[in-house]
Image (cartoon, rainbow, N blue to C red; front, side, top):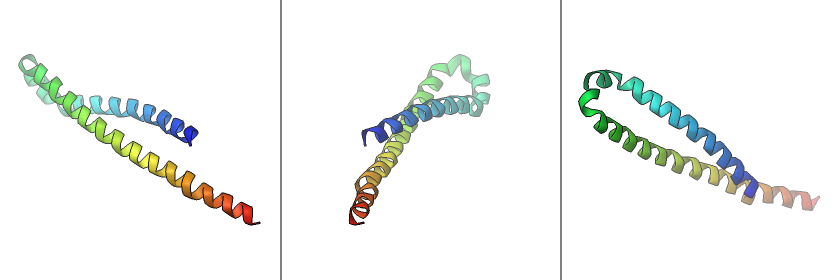
Length: 91
């Protein structure tokens, strides 16, 4: 089970980098009009708002990823693997 969690963590790291890149590129593309018009006066507010939303989205992403990953790992190791062992012992 430890190996499966290590693999899930490796996948999580790659997905986190991808998530971060997509989020920040998407924010810049989505709010480009506001950046052009109001960047000189409201830049700190924009960065703070984007960072807060990034933190919230990243926490939600992390929660769902680990909830789904650990559920799948536990189901596999506690149910499927045990069933295979029991089926192998009866033959």
